[in-house]
Amino acid sequence: MLTPGPGATELEYELLVDSDTQSAQGHTQWFYFAIRNGQFCGTVHFRILNLRKKKSLYQQGLQPFVFSRKKHRTWESNCCQGVYYGKKEKGLRDLSGSEARGDVMLQWSYRVDRKEDEIYFAAYPPYSYSMMSSFISSLEQDAVARCHFRRRELCRSIGQLPVPLLVVSEGLNEKEGEQLPKYAVVITARQHPGEVVGSWAVQGLLRFLLGPTPAAKCLREEFVFHVIPMVNVDGVVHGNSRCTLAGVDPNRVWHDPNPILHPVVFALKNHMRSLSQGLSSVKGIEMFLDLHGHSAKFGCFFYGSNPSAHISNAVFPKLCSLISTDIDFETPKVAEAEECSSTGAEKSEAGNPLQGLLTGVKEERNFPNSKKKITVKLEKLHKRLKDKKEAWHQFEENKLEEEIQAV
Ligand SMILES: [Zn+2]
Image (tube, rainbow, N blue to C red; front, side, top):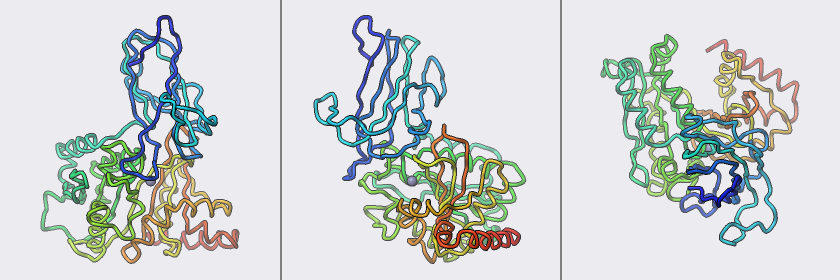
């Protein structure tokens, strides 16, 4: 509740974001809070003092998302003023008088012009565990969708929350026992709770896959989809940015997940191992798509999982670029090679830890409100390009075309 003095037309608030649960590294990125203004109308200035990432799309046009009960009644992304993200003044102290942790701050202003309003601010329109559960329930009520999928429980999280696994295949619930072995496509999202875009993407993807279109029917007939819409359920419930309840980034434990400390990744890896070995009436894994959100890069792009993998790793991103006018299969740039590999993401995520199981693809979406430019980038392409840019490019493009012709 805002508590202005009499006649005030401006208010200023300093905010501190809680670190991820049990996290020694103090991840602070995700935020979601609300204000009630009572009788106050005027401008409110917010300043989050303890952020850590040096680069952000806030520096390139991204704004906090706002939901006003009285004004917008939907999430809006362009209604703040004076958005600044960057180094904070040296020695800046929070309201308690302590020097605020973190080097970076985000500040913005918002004009409140309706009395008795309730206004929410978030890094991105939230997508909670309850929303996921409701969405799955709605699919179970849908006359078309419910014929083609089954909800299973992959495992329980540390916090004892069920982690849903949706198995999607044509006529799965009508013709049980008549299903021919198919290749599996494994899709995961929300390893990192603050990357909410992954949930919105997987929701749209499930709507499409379980819908009535000929394309969806064809895909259901050809493949069986194993979708884990929310990997880090505890992190989502506790409002974390990256970590689980144990303070661990799940995307950094794929090499050797512990069944007690990392139960979801442990169960997920075992599940994928059983699929890759042809158990459960599955011939193997055709593709692994791991959905993330990126806070500092424009567009929508892919990381190939393994620099030494076959060029077929690039086929799916290339096909995406061919069927969508929004997607540009951007040729790699030498300067980006180090940038790409230094994220650490490719080294520790869906690549080497799954070697022998599959070749995977990781999709990153930027947070919206940035330039509408969608790119496809593959680590493999970056690395090979380093020495022989033109010759290599022609060679790989030709090979890629051959692969696509074969699809
Ligand atoms: Zn991520």
